[in-house]
Amino acid sequence: MKKTIFSILTIISLGIMNQTVIAQAKITHLAVYVKEIKRSSEFYTKVFDFKEIEEPFKDGLHVWLDIGNNLSMHIIQAPWEPVSINKNNHICFSVPDMDTFIANLDKLKIEYSDWPGNKGKINIRPDGVQQIYIQDPDGYWIEINDEY
Image: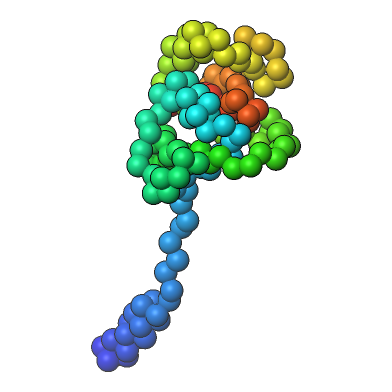
């Protein structure tokens, strides 16, 4: 009996060991295609206080920013071709204090709106999270919420 149980456990163990383990994919960075790299990098550093980090290309066409949580944003300048921009396709950043963030937007003279597009209004989700929407210099939509 013990020999049978040992044989069964050995077979199960070998079967488990032979299975290929596939790790879950994870996000490492966002890439944003821009018309003017200086303008866009200034926008993201001033609005979100993202810090510039080392980038390997050193060609003047890339800026990498630390956006927290071991993620980076790669701002990439290339010959500009118009892009179709829809509010449903947006980046979202969460902030710890919506009032402080909005005060900075006001200081920088950057307009914000709620989801329907009402300027200067804050959207409140059913779970109480506040959301606003802005656009970067190339027109990309960005949601900011306080689900920090």
